[in-house]
Length: 211
Figure 1 (cartoon, rainbow, N blue to C red):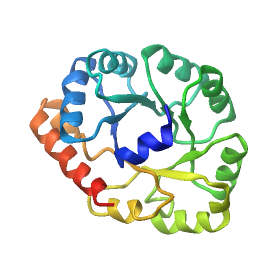
Figure 2 (tube, one colour):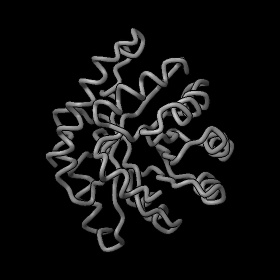
Figure 3 (cartoon, rainbow, N blue to C red):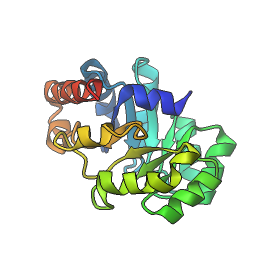
Figure 4 (cartoon, one colour):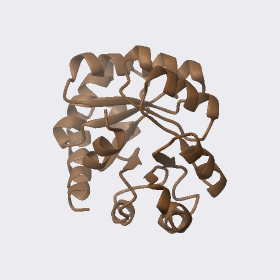
């Protein structure tokens, strides 16, 4: 999979924190139907592996990956579950190496120029800028690009991004996509309110289409 091309086409990546794997398939179907087919299931819960496996098996239209990969064993678990890509909130050389060994397209996280430099040296073509708003937002990314644009690196900002500011990020050519939790609100997920999530996905997809 060409991770950069896939993410750029999607524009907005729902960041999913799921406690009940039984909800993963209807959730994925709602997001895909709304127009957001690329999904990041975070490894913050014990249900993550089962959720990824279920989506992979039952929602072929979805491109499902694993987020919050903080250790090599988490990378291996994600691959075993069927994850098609991996994302991390920070830069850890051991995790990057584990993803390389597993053949998993991987997006490490950075928040500073030093971390970005290390990620590029490790072979990263795209990085997750996290926590985006707290770390300086669009202005910070533009400043980093002033020094690093010539490397060809691209960004996936996540953290504090919402419908009010996502267009500002997507207006920057080197920002491939944005990750966001707002598309899957905790209450809507807890209540299995799939129409609400589908509508939020459709609204987000419309924003991405107008970048």
